[in-house]
Image (cartoon, rainbow, N blue to C red):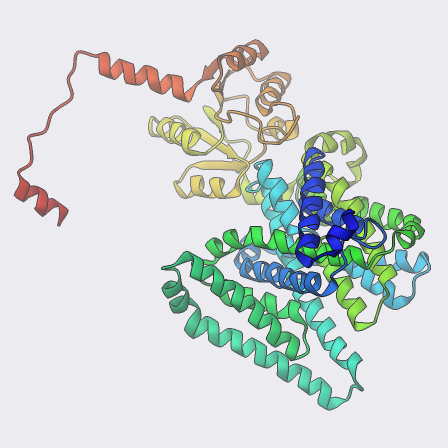
Length: 573
């Protein structure tokens, strides 16, 4: 009965797919899995090897192709080369190093698993891409997007995005040669078509992007419609020139990346991207055979272990070689412990060209399911994982000379007060203490906050309040107070309260001064005082007490004389 109802119309089929996606997505949410895992599962279940719901290939393929164009458009619109430049060589060194080493080792592993050279090369390159969408979401949920390891991770993810661009250009050029006998004319035609596309993008950026978007932005709905039209038209033009729709969608995003409206466009298109990508994974799943996936189980497990363990180790080795603390390298390395949706798109392009078979695409899909599911928990519980693995990481060193050179001050300098947290509350307290001639050392896990503090002429150091090794390196002996304005843990689900770690570490290292911590709950304050804090600061209660003190005092506020209407108009002018 259900099969007959679904076969009755395309609308019924799409409705059934959406219901299935909602149900699987809800299960994924319960297990803290990103949507991409649920979407891949929907594709496999709805395919011919599963329930056989997906039967109308042409409409699904059309929506899938539009979804890929929108996805790559959003990648292009967020290509921020300035972030790489602001982080210095670490983003380039780590990003390129990870791509090179992962490709090299992955290629050898694939050859060892019995794959031919071309398939091994494709799979190895696919293993180098990590999912920016998933990583940004997880780091944002943990409030570590502005931490040092978070900013470095974003930097080398952008490097990966640039590698994706180059890989797709190369693949498109190879695809043109694969569709007909390649000669010098064909090669020149490829470069000519590429130059035409880049020329169009540069002309659009130079003369049309800003004025056109300013006009269209008067109607936000029209601006979004224009963005979708630009992505689709560039994708169609690129496909007509032989480069494939993927490259055109990406270049359309680059065309709008310099406009001040890019963030608004990206935010509004993100839900549409997620919706359309569902059909990409449905189309992908409809081409996969569950029996063939079962035959690749051993290879999938080997490659998944390489991605889950090998990629983080590669990043950790590169970053410690550059002088970063092994903790920073470890946390940054966990962000590349999965492959991304680009890995599947890359393999799908290889299948369409005829370089690899659907079995290789199925293998990479299975690796994607395993690594994305596992890495989600690895990143969520990264600090617990570091504590578990720390005894095994001695070979990577612990000096952190790069962080010390870039982010810290001389440890011999005496300070009256050490201030953790340089946000609005902590920064104001620290500046007012400094104005009263106290020597204050500011500490924050955000390099941007440290930079702003230093621009005000004050001493600051990058550091994580939950890192006992870092706390031990501080000049504690001469300090009278350690003040933490962090109101709750900044390290995510089920991680020990960072304030508890701070109090215990300070006492363990013989700090004899007073400790002040910030809280907004009375019960929480009692716990902190029992652990050894001397003062619990409650910003809201303290502000209310001060307001009552001012209002209840005998002094009346000075009342200004009424301003005449003419004077008011003059002031407004």
